[in-house]
Length: 230
Image (cartoon, rainbow, N blue to C red; front, side):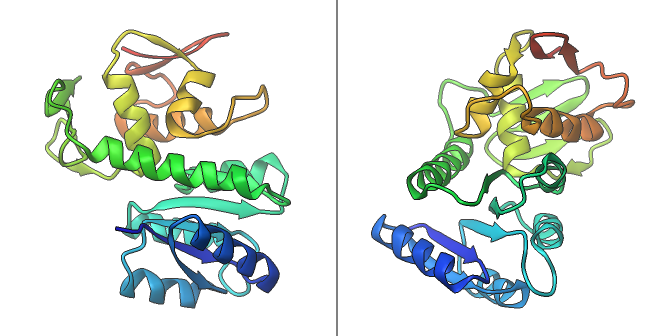
């Protein structure tokens, strides 16, 4: 069965190129030029991943990311001409799984899409050698249902990226992960010294897991190396 990709892009040239490219790559592709059209496709089609431009008429891509993430675990890759770190960080904070900057290489973008869809499918697939859930500090992560249950019994929403990252940690308690290793788990990019992707995602998890995110006891920083799940 073909996986469904929605391209939200107001530039007709860029949109046409992406539609043709991903169509030839075996995906069912839908296109929208603004947020209103995006929501119609989300409701009417079983969309697996959204390629979302930040600069859109009306509601911009960052606002759409926040609203979409509040309603769905769908994969989100931001496509943006903005090169400032703050825009990428805000996008990740709002729940985007990845981002690419214009001008982009179509083959690189295809790799990002394939990897995100593959990781999402793998984390949702049962591994017979792995327990169905992991318990830690009163929390419970149900691998089959992709649910995080708090010590009080509340169900905590996780984005795809957060679920993949937390799964990576809980499978190897005590291991110190470099940012590069963690980025390999959640994205197809190699970590660069100014890449804040993992830091942003760890901070998002801390706000959900830690009693005091500024003094973490579960996801701790190993200075000069990376992060450790205690």
